[in-house]
Length: 178
Image (cartoon, rainbow, N blue to C red; front, side):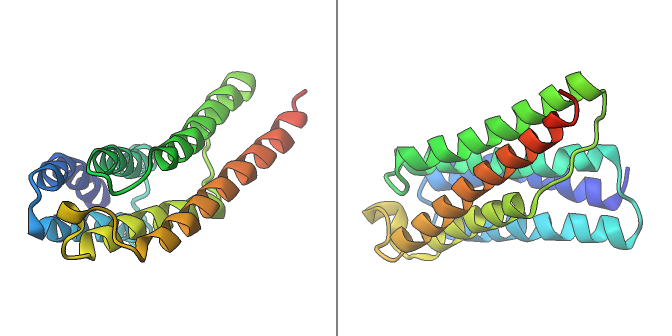
């Protein structure tokens, strides 16, 4: 198993500890989140530098992102830190991407998944949204910090843009096979 895949698996293993920290109102939860967030960049970079890109890594890396963000936003909704509509937006994007990939695979028998820049930007902004909320000293006890609202809308706009980008890209790809 490659080093990058080991880092990704460690990131997945740390997700429950992070979520427990959120629920238990641990002040140092941000120090669990930071390595998870930074390892997302590190595993891909290490895989490219060491020329160790694998199909397992191509599957695990985005899966780790989705697990982290979906469970985090579910927990943050319960804690009153993000609105429900934001999770619906995030889940809609994820569902569209998975459904599009699945349909493309059924029609063409091709497994290649090419991430879009819009998707990467949306995920990065979602991760920074979580970081900003965690960085606010009393966020876990007093609700959403005031300045996070702007970043929430920026992240929402990027996620919505990603939905449209993936949809138009998918329509273009499917039109070649219709």
